[in-house]
Image 1 (cartoon, rainbow, N blue to C red):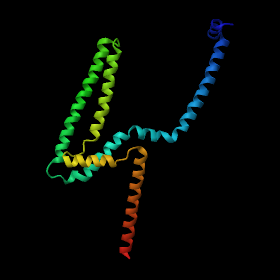
Image 2 (tube, rainbow, N blue to C red):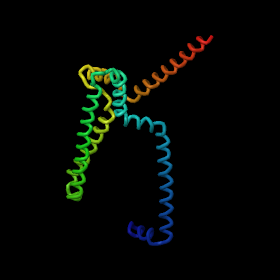
Image 3 (cartoon, rainbow, N blue to C red):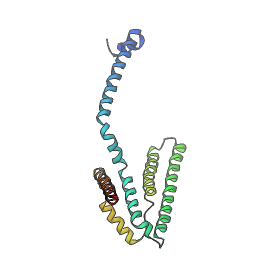
Image 4 (cartoon, one colour):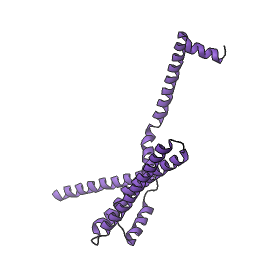
Length: 194
């Protein structure tokens, strides 16, 4: 029996369809078992993987929050407001660039109907790059502007966690320090009441 006869038997007879269905069911169960095994093995790493993917954005947020905590409320000369205006302007420019590249992508797709895939892929890639940069600009809008603040921002950038493991260790240390402060405050309050 050659391949053509086997194909005709599998698709043309009842027993062939039954055998084909059984083989598909066995293969499906095997694939589900493999997927479950791989997914279960990755269960502890899924959160870490997501944290690694979004770590650059989280680091930008951390740096902006630190700058605001250090300099934001203490700038009566308007540096904080000035920086927010400048960053908002940059964010608007990036939004315009994103929508223009997205519009060019749609135009190339509609006008050439995938006859120019290189041009289309260029505009789609440009749209994705600009959208990521736009997202990072949006999350870092809460910093200040001046040379001393830029120096402070560079120093904070150097002291910021370089990977997710350092970030998690820093958060654990901060939580432990907060717990210690609460415990000491409660102890001092109980001693004062005695």
